[in-house]
Structure formats: C-alpha cells, structure tokens
Image 1 (cartoon, one colour):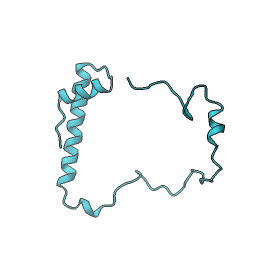
Image 2 (cartoon, one colour):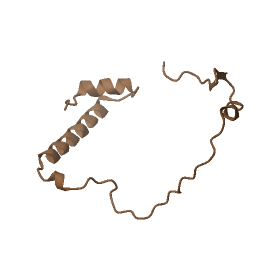
Image 3 (cartoon, helix red, strand yellow):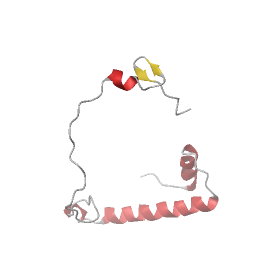
Image 4 (cartoon, helix red, strand yellow):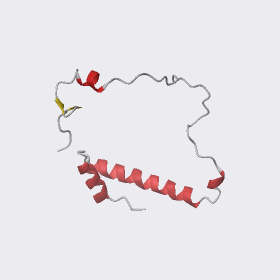
Length: 98
C-alpha cells in the first residue's frame, strides 16, 4: 500500500482543484494516518474471514423503492427534436474538460 504523505495530498488536491491551507493538509494527513492504522488492525485479525461483510449498518427489511417497470424507449428522432445542437445524429454539448 502506498503511503499517504503531505506531497501526495498536495498533488491530489491540485488535480481536484482544491484550495487548502497548510492546517487543512495536516488535518487531512492525520485522518489518513488514522484510517491506515485502522486498516492495519483489521488486517492483523486472523478471524476476520468468519464475519459476513456489512452491506448496511443495521437490518432493513422494508424496501421503499418502487419496482422497475419496463417502458418503451424513446426513438432517436424524438430525443433529437428537442436538442438545440446536433451533430451526426447525436446531441452536441460544450466541452467539459480542458
């Protein structure tokens, strides 16, 4: 596992366009150290394989999601008729990433 150090955090923050103070970097670095220690403790536990992975923090028998119902998909022409800019049968959008 790669170690998380101040330089690695600064590179990641720069790539994500985050503006962080030195104090925030130190706080984040301390949080990463805590998480890494916890992961190491879990890895040391030889009995960890006997436990089922937790999917949800508490039992939940009630589902509030609706059932999926198949519908007839819209045709390409129906979708494109509402688009301002079209190019080669597709909706043309502004460039997102420079």
